Image 1 (cartoon, rainbow, N blue to C red):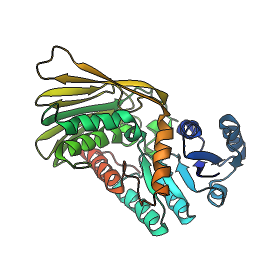
Image 2 (image 1 turned 180 degrees about the vertical axis):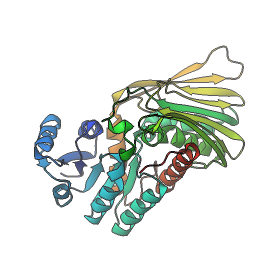
Image 3 (image 1 turned 30 degrees about the vertical axis):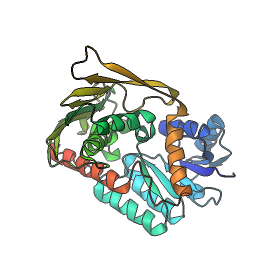
Image 4 (image 1 turned 120 degrees about the vertical axis):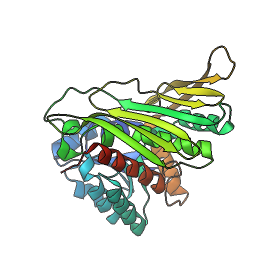
Length: 340
């Protein structure tokens, strides 16, 4: 494998396929194995994504000595179990968000990985796109003045289906846990950049949600956070309401719009952000181009951290993940959403 990090993909759902395709175009990684609870599903995935080895159980993948890192792509409630089992097998772990069903679970996952001496990261791929770095740099530059308000949404409309994972309370369904972490992590990132820190924690929080009458999970939800320095953030998410899914940062001397903050380019291309300076007649368009795949950039940063002997990936640290998980806990508590 040379300098390539050997990946094993645990589970064969849609996001697992997206990740495998991204790694296939990465500079430092290669998917060498996939696992499903069904040998047939594993083989079908392997054929579709040119993966050499197909395992018919998760246990077989974890015991495969050819694999150095595992991508956990199971439904939410099983994340922590398989992170801990992967760590026990000596594998580095990239886990789909949310890392756990709550902050306490995420703490257990990090503790297990630290004890095993392996790297664990929650998979917020948007953090690795140059667009996100550009946004942070613009905020830090002071060109829009003092940051006063942040708005961010990640919400889409799925028709209710009783058998759908997204709507199932038993599988951690609903918008807050599924996609709420994106706008929350973004708001914490930008408030932190404005304050000269990697991220910031809210000093006050108010949350609201519409709970689905049949499933009990949140169909759509909104929250207002206040950060130090009187920075306000309005975040929203949902699986039962389509929003514009954009992000805005308003400062004392201008504003910044990010039309596509979460998945700017899955497979390379150009994205744009709009910068409005005080007194300018129209916003300036800033174009960001990359030939790299979004999930490939994430995998490369993970591999680089391991190669550099780091204990975590700088772009998404344990403290950052735990801070976001804490806010999601507060959001669900505020709206009375409990998982059985």
